[in-house]
Each structure stands twice: as structure tokens, then as C-alpha cells.
Length: 638
Image 1 (spheres, rainbow, N blue to C red):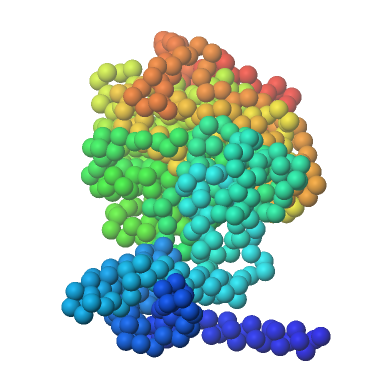
Image 2 (spheres, rainbow, N blue to C red):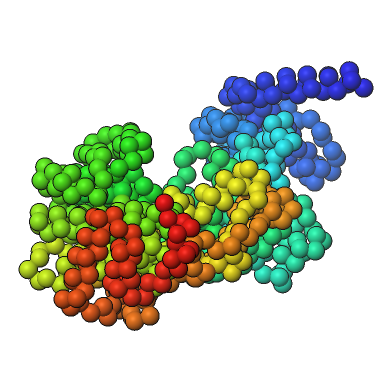
């Protein structure tokens, strides 16, 4: 038994080695000629059985030689033998068809000429057509058999058995492409219908199943599902529950990117695992590229927090608008170094500066403004981790308020044309220091924007959580899943707004271009997402089953954390803009001499490092701020 198995393995290895090399084209031509000879013999046999009344199996007359000679001539003219048989596709079939049709047409023309001269024919015209059907079928069959044999030889026993989601013409075409791909690692076992009532039960001889059948395991042959990017986007934007249902069935989901994003390899190499951003994606953003280019092209642009997740993507988004120079400012040395290496590698012609600086240092910032003369500022540098800032309130205020004030004052001093401040939804009715510190910075920007003599346009953008950003819940969950759990969620009902980094930064650039000064732009974040659902999705996307393979535990709300985030304060309403995803929050904040004094007073208390008095002033400046009790704060203050 072992000897037989060893022989089989040895034989398979020999076949695989042979399959790695291409068969010479001359050999393929000889095989095609042999097929045409066999087809011609079959044709003459069929004709003789009808016309002569007796069967004649072998024909070696001048008519037979003429037919084969004409066929060989067109093989050489069309070079139908030149394709690699194992990769035979639609184009190869068309070339074969052209060759045979031309051969048959030529035969009929020659027939008529010979008949008019000699009153005889090579074969009857109907026989020429019969020959065409036979030879094309046999040539095509030969290539299909070779291709299938090659696939079987190279078949991987660990290939993924997958369904294709959808039954449209596009879905069927995708399935055909995957099936015909000799290098595929996917074995298509059927189609999943998006509707429960099936009009037909099979496509390409493969079964069509619906979700109900999969749920009740009436039909279950695959472990994965492949979905096109277009359908994935349609399902995500339509708030369809199909993807969640597939995940709950423990089916891995793969996506096929848009055709223009292919790298030119086989279709199977383009199939990638679906990630969380794919499940939460929404309608693609349409930017006014001409207007943005007119604003940002040829400008010196300063981006603070440029090594962070938001700041770094703002830098990447700006590159397409060809700024004169990008000043990448951050206090984190290593992340900024990595960012600069990326820029040098991917955009060697881009002029950029890597600047180590702390936004709390007015003198350091002043020297940067004086030397580089920035024309536009995107201010993304901030402390944003809520529990950490609850334990370090003076640091939150110093960076988020004082840092913003420093940059704002310098923007006015050096006549910067636009100043775009990246705020947060946590600034709305804040219950934590981080949110209140950002709200105080918003108020300061609005206060200076009231001065009509100032040329700088101060614009605030406010949005929620960004998927995958530093400090967000996504990397935290990912790390916990990699360690096989448990995944920790603070509360079963906690919800958050989410958008992708790419989406958020595109909207920041769009809002920065449309602002006239003093506006707070609010982004359409879609529907809030329950964090527990997010955790379950991430576990399933990683190939595990929630509560079975990886547990989920509740840890309780952290200091300053809210169950629900808000994008608009109670006293604010919104006005539409030309962009459907960007609204203007019309604040009813009243500025008087007392409020302006509070802003100066807050700065003084922060400078004096007085935590309690700073918070006391902050509560007056941001009356909707409901902080922790003093007893709660003393437990956390460092």
C-alpha cells in the first residue's frame, strides 16, 4: 500500500514538473493537424454512409488531402495553435472559431470553382459545414480537457470552497473567470441568491441557494463567500443585513476589487479578505477637485499632528493637489521619521519638511511660522484618549486648548489664509475633559473669527470615531482577538459614530475649502454603531465564533465616557452645504466681555498648572460640560 502511494506521489511530481514547462507550439500544431485529419475522416465517413449507401471508414483520396491542406494553411495564417493551452479562454475560442469559419467558407468557394471547371467537388457544401462543426468541437474539447487536467494536477487540497454572492450576469461572469483560472485557490461550489424565492436552481451546473437553506444547513458545501466590490458597496450603503447573516453562519467573506484596481495578475490573486471598513462603507465621496486644487495647489501647508492617523492621511490627501510644500509637524519623533520615509519612497518629487515641535511652545511655533511662512494650516495635533485625559486634565487643556490658541494667534499674526481645526463629536455636551478641552478650543476659534479685520478664515470640522485611528477601539479589539480574547466592551448598549480615515480626511479638505470663517462643519456619520456588534463582526471576520472561540466581557463605563455620542449640541441647528455629507452647525454661543475674560482666565490657570481652577473656569466657559465629581477626579488625577 505504501509503495502504491509513493508511486502516485512520484508520478504526480513528474506531471507537475512537466506542466511547469510550455509544450512547443509546433507540437500543438501537430496535435491540431491530427484532430483536423480525424475530423475530416469522420466527415467523409458520414457523407459516404448517406450518399454511397455503404460505409467507408478510411478516405485517402485527393479530396481528403485537399481538405486537410486547406485547414493546415489557415492554422498557419491565424496561428490558432500559438496560445498556451492550459490558459485557454474566450479569446482563444474566438480565434479557433475564426479559423474554422474561414476554412469552411474557403472550402465552399473552392468547391464552386472546381465544380464549374471539372464538374466535381471536394465534398458537398453541407459536408463542409459538418466538417466545421466536428473540427471546432474537437479542437475546443482538446483544449478544455488539457486545461482541466492541468487544474487537477495543480489542484491544492486546501483550496477554499466558496459561494459567489449574487446571480446577476456580472456575478456569473466572475464565477466563470474564477473557475477558468488555472491558478485559482478557490473552488466555486454554488451561488447565493439575495432573495429567498428562487426562480431557477442552477447556474453553470452549480446550485443556487438562499440564506434560509444555509441557515438550516439543507445545502452547505462552502466555507466562504466571494462578493464583488460593487455589490459589497451596494449592500453596505443600503443597510442590508445580508453580510451580517453570512458572518453569523461562520462563512468567511472575500471581496473582488474594482477592475481598474487589479494589478494585472490572475483574477484569483485579486480576491482579498473583507475587512471592517468594507462592512461599514457608505456612498463614495465626490469631491470638487477643481475647487480644491485652486485652494491648495502651489501653497505652503502646515499639518500639525502629521504623524498621527488623521494628520498623516491629510498629508496623503493633499499630495494630489500639488502643494508647493507640506510642513509635517509632530512631537513624536519615531512616527514622524516613519512618515518621512514613506514620503521619500512614494513621492520623491514632493517637497516636504519634517518638523519636531510641541504645539504648547509658542516660541518654537513662532520660529516655524517666521521661517516657512505657511499659507494654510490643518491643526490635527491633540490629546484624545478620554480615560487618560481624565487622569491628566491639565495636559489635555494645555495641548488641546493652549496648543490651538498658540497656532490660532500665529495664524493671525502671519496672515495665514485658512486655518482648519480638527475637532470631535465629544465636544458636544461634553462629559469628559478631552471633549470639554476641544470645545473650549472651538470657542476660541469662533471668538477670533468674529473680528472682521482678520484675514484668516478659521474653520472647525467635527466628526466622530475614525476606524483604525490611533487609540480607537478597532486596534484594541484586533490585539485582543490576536491573543484569543477576551474582547472587552464597556457596556452592552454603548454606541459610536464611525467613518473611515480616508472619508474623514477627504471631508476635512472639502470643508477647509468651502469655509468662509467661523463655521463649525459637522460630517454626516451615518447611523451609530453598537460597539458590541462591532466586536462580534471583528471576531467573525477573524475566523472565530463569538462566545465560543473568543469571549466578550463587559467592563463598565470608563471615567468621562458616554453611552451615546452627539454631533450637535442641544442649542444648535444645521444648515445644508453644497456637499450632502457636510452640514454647518449654527451655534447660538453668545460672546460678551465676560466670555472673552474667561478665555484669558483659562489660559492663565493652565499656565499656572492649577488643575482645580482650570476646571472651574472651564465649567463656566462650557456650561454644558458636566465633569466628574471631585471625589471621582481625585482618584484619577496624576
